[in-house]
Length: 250
Image (cartoon, rainbow, N blue to C red; front, top):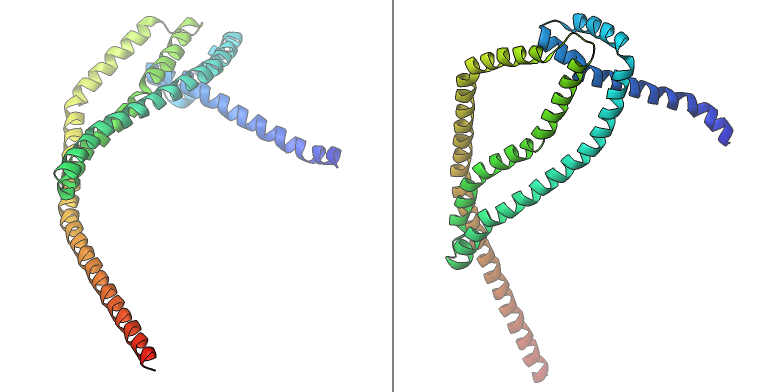
């Protein structure tokens, strides 16, 4: 019955909801408070948790308000980000139609060369796919920057001991670290792109001749099957003609 089922499943359902909610709140607190404090002060997670406990004791209401506002912003801006991604996908599809559609008409329909279009498509697809992936990833960047900035400025607005000078000092220190690693990151990225292009080009160099050979074999096989079917049809017609003459003779 419904009352018995409610008694059986109510406690597990409430427990699952409570545990899930606690994990989500803990995740939001770690992402928006613990991680920034670890970065700003250069401390470990246990020290950051202890420090956050003192901040939470002095700012319970403000932190609860932050969680509610963050929930609302997550819903609204999540819908906005979905719309931006959808528009980006439409733009990528339209650009893809231009990049591949016009050459298809020019090469396949006018010049009648499918092989040339296959080579063009493989060569053009490498930068196009990379640009599309970067564009889709970039759609999340404004929203990520907004949420990170929102949590940081909310943190310095609390009675937490952090100020705008704390953010400025961390930004300066971070810029120096990034500046020292920038050439290495650029070199690795460049080598990765070159290696990816080389691998795809090698695969294309192997695949295109095999594709051409397979296409020629398929055409020959089709011609052989058509010829065999034509011969079978001729034999069938001759057989039917001979049977007709035999019946007429009888």
